[in-house]
Image (cartoon, rainbow, N blue to C red; front, top):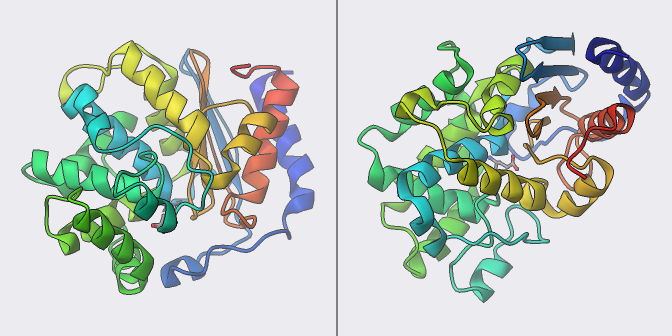
Length: 304
Ligand code: GLU
């Protein structure tokens, strides 16, 4: 079976789950999204693209944006990045405050909210026009200048982002935020509001599947070692407190978002993005998880 037949098989199989789970509702703008949309796009290193379903419908990538921010900050700061954020799975919810207090303001990893707020703070200190430069970076990663922030999503999240504000305040208390808290939150929420479709997301994630891909924006590429580390963090921390389960069932580095998207890569083979807004209790897309499990089972291609 080729990838197109496999995607079609997966799509048909997973449709049985289409009524399971609920879309995220804690961000009012996310409630407006039709929960019955479902798309998949896979891109290979040889340059082939395979899509099924609503792969051209754009959605808020939410936490998947944390991977792009991490790549940018890691490229700029190198190993010094790890002085301010760890690389251990949290085993807690993505927006947990308890662990941050116990560990005195050093977030467990860059893919939970506390870690992403520290990364946002670093980018604010390092870049002249953080929002513009971040957007340009992602646009260039996927070779598409149509990608935009969803401003009403960002505003809607800021108006209701009390827990993220609490996390930012605690980070500031422990001296792990340099900039104004409000500025950090606004930048973080704009990253989360970034709106992309499955095809664009798969293109952008080729940077992590293909160790040789140049990051046009920097006129250079991440080193092989940096890509390895970003993939390792995605593998161990990319799925909230369900990272172990995702590793167990799927076996690919990836990152999910509460908008219902999941992006994942098979090193040196392909990048894939799946989107379906209905989430399980841990905040991961029900159909997205199942689709990727079927993909690696059917193709027998995973990192394990
Ligand atoms: N903007 C969301 C939040 O901070 C992102 C969460 C996610 O996608 O995991 O709550």
